Length: 622
Image (cartoon, rainbow, N blue to C red; front, side):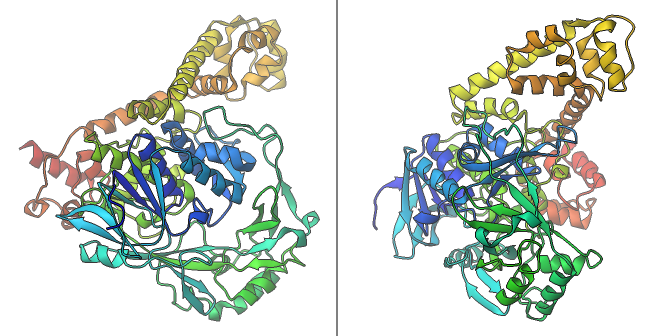
């Protein structure tokens, strides 16, 4: 034995999942050990230097609202901010930040080092210590045993990682970093099912060698927002990104390498992300398109390194290089390193409970790419939930589970546990049936009270939520009371192509019109502008969304309430579904494997039909 101290929570891996898990458990009061193969790559952005995006931005805001760190660290280190989908309804608005890669990792490390209760150990974990089907610690490559009451595995792409560039392949969890062996083999021996997935990354190039005059500039928002609901700094200046395109000549060069492509020649067995395909996959699947978008993204404030988003590839490096140089603006490009594909082990997440604890081994939690997900944001929220639940478990507290109607995090975990995934799972707004309730603007109102009750969200956060609630209600009341004369507003209404009014009308009724915004009223009505001046911008936004979408929001709440009735129908104990012949064969098989805790959970299992649910409810009623 090396160190005699027993930890409450041991976190294996210091990527986005591991960092959030360690921070959450420690901030809740657990004694935490964070074990990583390399202290210098804590919170490394292995792929694109950005946080957020469609649905992913909502997740970062939810992590922040609960008391996690990703939003704060993103705000402190971003170089550009954009709110995506502004032209659509608020359920689709999604924040995205371009990050300074080196600063992001540094800020995460500093945050963890300044978090009481977090210890560090730099070494590979090669196995678990398991006694009586309960994990009690980890073993390292040096043969050291660390004892822990719970373990969170967040191994990312490192489990038996295999990197492919053309016909070359070599072990590794990331460029220039070795993979991790031993854990998969032990888990299989313990009865776990494992699979293989793949992901990829594009080449990195020298920004000094690019001609930006041949590209389209993509600036950040004129008034940049941020992720955290706390008083983090806003961006005083921003770095632009750029857009360029592939062309038929680029495609022809890339096709020359197809015979050496590990993907087309079958050397890659794992399934890749459908929604983030490699450039060779795009050319093959979309042969009718003569160009594809390339996003040229700077890696930080000071570095010249550039991320070539949209050009992910595992073709031979010389083919990548020749094709790159045929892209507009890349004629003289110098490559820092080629793109590559990486295969790695994952464990189908149907083997987990909704707390992310494994069903086979007590006190063992999985979070991140080990569960078949892709993306920093998906990993971070799983790490947060695993850290919270590991802490709660060892301190005898209730599990913390978010419903599908409460958070995108709840949708993600519910999807993984009930449906599983055979390709890297990525969050989309379309996956959330209650997305009009799960907006990026109200994550604090939805989740900070829950985080505060846990002891993770601070009193400062809770007071900001109370203030926002008070202000939002005050604004709605003010707009309900504020009467507008026809003479004051008809000129504006005619200008906007909206029906004029013939009698005094409340401001709230005008705002319900789809083509009337608050900014239209305030530029015309000085008394209203003065009355609204004391209120914060986020409270104003919240009030307007409530007014404009009141009917839709109310319907969504009613639907969520009906779904909750099924969630409240608890299935007691472990049922032998094989003994229910009225169920379909597939339903018996799936229900036996998943062992759902409620009728609602059973209804969401892929392959379980409404008829099967009716049979199950009759059986349980007996």
